[in-house]
Length: 236
Length: 256
Image (cartoon, rainbow over all chains, first blue to last red; front, top):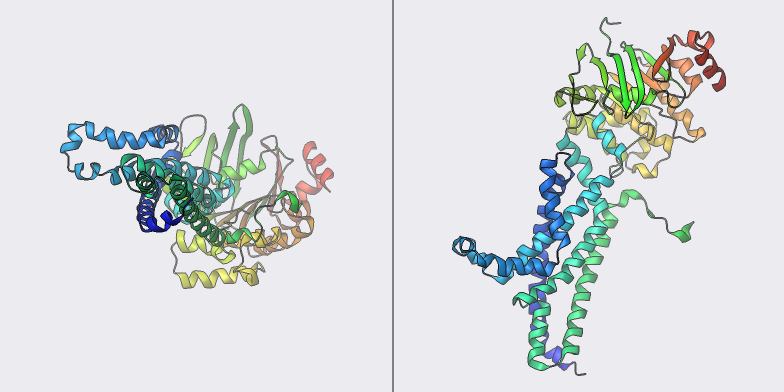
């Protein structure tokens, strides 16, 4: 093995990393924004309100991300309406197709995580809101959402890591993200082990940063639970 | 004593599936009344209390607050729902409720828990609310813990905070749902002490409790429920010392 190729192509790998980070950051932020209303609609007792988000989550959780990417990238261009619409400049770009697919996918998962967190809040705390005469909006804004945010963090951190790994699929629609760039370099140098190892290490490093950030946020957000909120079997 | 009862419940019924838990309970509470509601478990006393501010939806009956009738209508199923959420919300702001399991908001400090209602629901000015809430925490003996979180307090302390949180809304009537049942025996006294103080101030209170001595000393009226009906009611002297009903007699003698 000759790791000098890694050194030589390091700037290229960094370029790919930058594209990957953009993909992840944009889709996680957009997905998170869409997830909240989807989760709130999903909780509704009215089937007319909860039906659509249910179907949405069902579809995006039940089909492979790769299929979703292909559907947006190859599918959208099949329609003349799309090709002639003002959206075409966006839908023609593989980067934006990936963003759209990732955002739809991660918003479905995140909505489900939010829903679980909101429903995990003890009934008594909700009743405590009712008896002081809070309106629904006050209840969500002051108690339920801040509480859900603390509960959601571990699962949400996990979802971001999954998104990070899923972002490698962007390389299948010609995007030169970290994986795409690695494949391009390998096509030129025939050093798959060295370059893929390097790419793997970079993915790991990004994961570590994400995990570390979430650990800090969790610590801060859940400080009210006391120093040892979860009892492990050996503590007994 | 005003002519109009602060709280009037007429013929409250409640069914859960096939089980009829409340079979028509009526009660009037005038300003300054301290009414204890007793009964063995399953008699419907907690359900009755929870029906008053619609934590539980009654299946039949009338609820009047200061003579104003709460609008109720049937939805799907047997339960009654409020016709006007705004009216219910207004009523709830004036009827305090203290839970058996405290139900403090764990992500807020003690002081924030107490300030939440007056500050964000009643929209009172912050300075005034802060002053008043600190006074209330002082009164229930928790002032030194105001910046701690609920998980750092004992059960008795949490319940005292919950009482302060209720008082912060300046409620006209306070409902207590077995406020000491979730507490260790040695912590019961501190909570009862606070409640006794409120009774002495002339607060209007409805208390579901198992603390017989407390009920006997503090109440102006005692109601004994059995299988969803009022079995016996009257002054504490009458209910505790000369109950007419056999069941009430048996219950009283078994608890002392």
